[in-house]
Structures are given as structure tokens and as C-alpha cells.
Image (cartoon, rainbow over all chains, first blue to last red; front, top):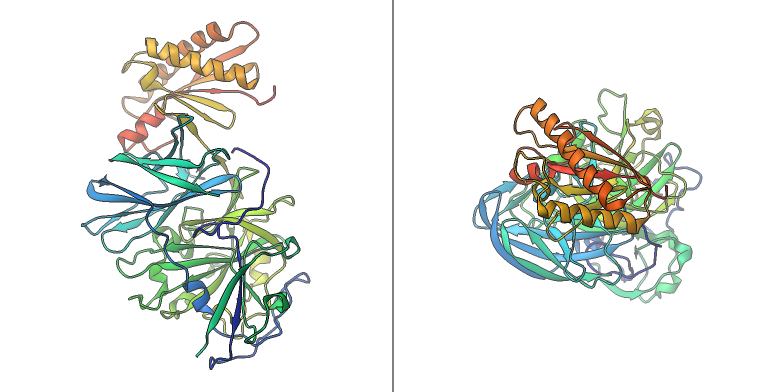
Length: 191
Length: 355
């Protein structure tokens, strides 16, 4: 894997969110059960909160699917589909693509992690380089990529993520290309 | 009714957290006055659908990657949107993720894994010796009782990370959540209600007895390979290797380099020279699984020798080049598809960095 010095960054994309949201709440009518500060924590565990505990599910559920940055029509696994690309995020030592396929047929497209050669790639047009999904060889000898395994096309978007090698700092835009989809999708790289 | 006001501010390095949501402050309080103890860390998020075919996607949130004795504990939550049609949060985890609870701990992609990009390793979950505990993780029942509008926190024990690893990419629920800071110790307080553990109500109780009797898998991590190629996919570079596509080098069933093949070898030789990677090279021929094993073995050997000869010509003296053939025994992609077979038909050149 390419290795570059790590650097702090603020990324407000869905993936790689690195931010601090300070939230202030008024009094509510949620139940406030008492914490049970026992258990098996190590001596270095985080300290217990001083305020009552309450259901904060809404905080994590408030996040939104990122908008589509670009699309291309074609077919995937033999079915007509649209490739929708949301984000390409440069991370510390890699890149993460978030995308999904949509289509009129309700069909499970699987074997994603076992077919890295069929997954989308990132293309640095300027340097004419193609970045392919990062893989590893599992204990059975199968080559797998760090890719979402399965998702349905048809119906609501079913997001997929793929981990790629690190893009150079100078790359600000990449094309996302996938076999079966003729038109490359140009998207900015979020850093 | 609870109302929440939010604002964005920076955070000092002393917190050692990439992202946190600060909760539970009384109205009118300033963010600066909030105790760090009141934080619900949100270190990254993604969406997942699993086997659900309609409705909004579930929200995957990473709350912590924490070092403990003999393990690394991942805290993550699965949030079921308010308008989700599911009556069982487990449906929102996919085929690979479900295998986690069936004992087929991975990773396959859906199982939890921690990627150390610097070390190019992906660390796997621990395995247990307990008959009824297929993984060192939260019980599956912690998901069965989650209702729409709720997010349930779970834990998973993975292999201990090396000392120097401070940031990992988390793979969970078939999604990659990058750049998560590694911290020390378990999260507190432990929630009084454990099935499910709703976000904000405390944290799941990690069964340290189970963790203590669990062991890393063999191997505890897999080595990652990142490939970058030219537009034609003729020359692909990865760690310590330059791989040449046989379809570009040779005609079908031939071991004689085409004119384009000669040019491609020259391009690879230029890369090897420029990288100053080393002078001891091994050229290895590989085939797909078409034809017989014997035929593929012989073809791969002849192709390796052809490339080695061309490389010798390009590189000149001072290089030690060995040619071997591996036939169809070392595929890097599926032989069930044309695209996979094309990847497997290759001649790789390996060397030792800095030699």
C-alpha cells in the first residue's frame, strides 16, 4: 500500500466524517434510566457521564445519503442498471468510493467482494492511471476486495463502498469507470 | 419533546477523537463547557441495506475502536430509520454480515475487520471456543428487538492491533468507515438494558471472560494488495511486483512476445530501473484455468522465459533474473468470468525493495 505522512483533515462527506458537533438539548420527556457503571471495563476505560442517559438514536439516524454526483447507464450482472456515484473520499492512506446501482428489475447483485475485477475503478485521467479495489487473499486462497458484498438494484438506493489505494494529493478529480457502463463518471475527490 | 441545537466547532488533539457528538447539555450551555464524559463518539458513518429490498437504508455508526488486553474492541451501532418497513433489524445486515453470527467469522466483507493501511494489514475477529458463542461479540438478540427509530450499539472483539497503529479503517456491515482513531479501554458506563443497547443509554457490556478465552484466527490478519495500472491495464504495479497482462504480451496460446509485448516489457523494465527496486528479479508466468493443468503449467513456463529474456535485454547486466511458471495454481481473480480469467493470465515480476 502506498504510504504517505498522515495529516489532519476535516471531511464532511458521509464517509470519513471528521467533525465535532456540539449539541445542546433542552429539557425533554424521554425516560432517563440510571446507568449501571459496573461491568468489565479496564482501568483505562472512559469515565462515566455526569448527566442522565437518554435515547440518542436520532443523532445517528439524522445523517443523509449523499447526493449523486454523476451517473451512467449500462448493465450489471446482466440486468439494465444505472451506476450512481456519490463520493470519492481520500482517506489516510487510501480512497473510499460510495456508489450504488439502480434499475427497474429487483435483483440481488452479489459476489462483490469475490469479484474485484468486475468492480468500478478510479481513473486519474491526467496521469493515465487506473486504481483498482484493494484486495487480500483469504484462508481459502480466494482473492477478496474490500468491497460491499451484495446489494439489490431496483427500489431505493442500496449503497456500496469500495476501498482503493491512495490517490496522490494532486488529484482533485477522478473518473469512475465500470465494465458494462460506457460513460465514465467524473467526480471530485473529497479531502 | 426534545429539541437539539447543533453547531460545528473544532476539537483539540488532546481528545484524540476524530469526531464526537456531544450530548446531554442543558439548554443554553456552551459547547466549551461540556464535559468530555458526556460524549457519544461518532467516529464515522455509512449506510447499509442487507437483505432488505425497500425502505431507507440502515445507518452504520462506529463509536469506538478500543484496545484491551489481548484484543481490540469495536463498538458500532446499527440504526433503523423511523420509516423503515423492517420488523427485525437483523434484516438490515447482508449475507456476508449474517455469516458473522453463524460462526463463519471473516472477514468476508460483511464481518468486522480493522484495516491498518500503513502496515497493509486487515485484522480479523477473534474466534471462540464456546459452542454457543460463534463470535466474541454482542448476541444476535441485541438486534432482534431494535425498533424503527432506534439505533443499537454492539461490540465485536478483533485481533490485537500492533502498538504503533493509531488509526484504522473499519469494515463492518459490508461498508468501509475510514480513519477511525484507536483508543484505550472500554467505553463506560455499561447500559442497564443490554438487549438492545440504545445509543445514548450507555454501552454494551463486553464479555471479557469470553474475550479472554478467544483467540486470534490463523492468520490474525491478511496482507492487503493495492494495484495501480496504466489505462490499457497492460502494466500493473503493486507492493514489490510489476504484473504484465498476458493478453497484451502474447497471442492466444503463444509464448512468443508480440511487438506490443516487447514494448510492454520495455515499459516495465523502465519502471524497474527507475524504482531502483533491486537487482534480483523473479519472472513468474500464470495462466487461467482453461485447458489442462499440464498445458497451463508448460505455457506459463514458456511465457515466463520469454519475458525474462526480453527483460534481460532491456535491463542489461547487473540483474539476476529467474523464470518460473505457476500454471493455474495462483489465480488472483475468479476463473468463472472472462474478466477474472484475463486478470489471471499474467506474467509477474517480483523484486525486493531496496535490494
